[in-house]
Each structure stands twice: as C-alpha cells, then as structure tokens.
Length: 235
Image 1 (cartoon, one colour):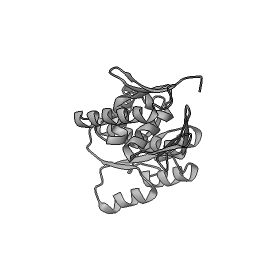
Image 2 (cartoon, one colour):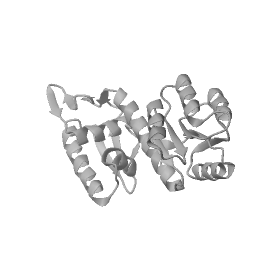
Image 3 (cartoon, rainbow, N blue to C red):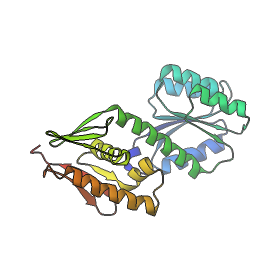
Image 4 (cartoon, rainbow, N blue to C red):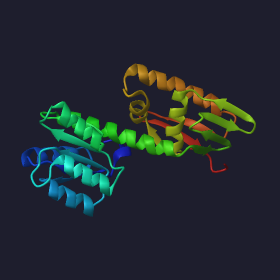
C-alpha cells in the first residue's frame, strides 16, 4: 500500500460474516487496519469508542441498518467518509445513501480490488481537501498562494496554471519528503498511464524554472519512486 495511507483505520460493518472476514483480511493484506462488526449496533458502539478514518457499511444489517448507522455516525463525526455495500440497486435506496452523505456506493457482488480502488479514491479526495485548507505555503524565499495560484518572490509574481498549482501544492505539503509518483498522478491526473506520466514530467520541468530564482530550493528526481521538494535549512 502507498505510504500515504498507512495507519488508516477502517470500520467494516457487514452481517455476512464470511464476506466480512474475507474483506477484512484483504484490507489488512493491503496495509489497512480494519475492525469488523456484524451488526449495526456493534458498529455504532465501535465507532463511538474508537477512532476511524473511513467506514464501510452494509445497508441491510440486524439491530440497526446501514442508513441509520450512517446517520448516527454523522451526528458523532460530520467529516469521516463512508461508503455503502449493498445488494440493492433501487435508485431510491442509492439516493437515500447519498443524501445521508455517503462518499460511495458499491453493489454486490463486487471484487475486492474494486473496493480498495474506491477506498483509495475517497482517501485521496479527503487528503486533497485537507491540503486545500492550507492556502499559503512558504517555499524558501517564495510564497505560494494555493487559492490564487500565485508564486511570489520579492516583487515578482508568477501566475501558475491549474496543473502547476496542484502539483506544487502536493510537493509543498510534503516538503523535504518523498512525493510518490503514482500518488501525484492519481490525485491530479486520475490515471497513472504513460501519457499522463510524461505530462507530469513536463510540469515538473516548468516548476523547476519557476523556482530557479532561489538556489536553495530544488525539485529532485527520486529514481523509480517520485519527486522531492528540497528546501535547505539556510531558508
């Protein structure tokens, strides 16, 4: 699993114990920490007493259905993302789930790989939203306004394109740390195919030109892994 999602705790509520155990084992094999509950009441108590980064809720459960549990979770935490698992395909049920605030909705049967793909998509959105909450970054002698997409040094201002700004935001958030290549591609370009990878290389080159006014700031290639925005301690 990509290091950006390490230590993610998932509340998994599924009354089909065989399916629940298989999904829990698969998630744990991918590096997630998953707690399995077999009914809505148990899920409610687990969420109330624990800390979770994401919830996966079966709709049809004994003692408390998934919709009711989701509403109660929302009362305790308005920000935690959640997704429904269900055999139902009726539009009214799907609409009810999204009205409660679901981030995604998967109908059975499904593949384990699809569940993980959707989990990662949700976590990227959540991480992206948190990153956007920080509107100003200090990059050596530069100031970067993420909302206005303006990079400033002294009296000089450069208006960045949207892709440049998104990429520099990711680099700034992980300054002096590795920004994994596939994470950046999936976050900004959605798909990590060859053409998007080449496109990202072009934008990295553009950002290097924008940042060359401060010799203590550089973007390094980490071969086979990604990039690192290095800001020397002299700044």
